[in-house]
Length: 159
Image (tube, rainbow, N blue to C red):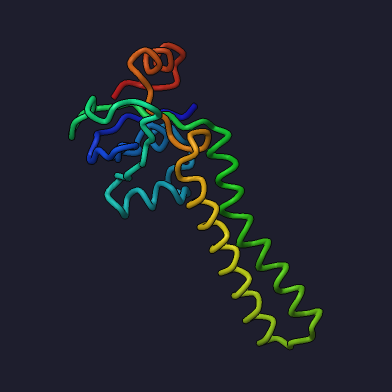
């Protein structure tokens, strides 16, 4: 499980919005200067907002600026990365093959390929929207005891 500490910036009926500062992985990685994640984090101020489902907890137990620990299973990150990168790419390649098969010419094939890429991006967006309340693929809120277990095994460093 990938864990990150954060600060509650909004409380809704079924979820929290948590602001995280992504530093735990970037500081220990050997590819710091060649990493796209590091560059994006520098551009947007190194903060991101994560929607965390309350999973049956009462929203009244949380207030703005509370510090919380958030966990995301590694399989969710790996599968999500594959979905986000491969779906538009594969749909673009299929559309390009279709354009070639229909003998649309170079410009027609390029247009069909761009359309296929956009359709793939739309499919990712639709899938994301459908999965927004599925607790199996969303970040989880780690309780104090769960967070201590992750610190004990060395997954979370000192903040």
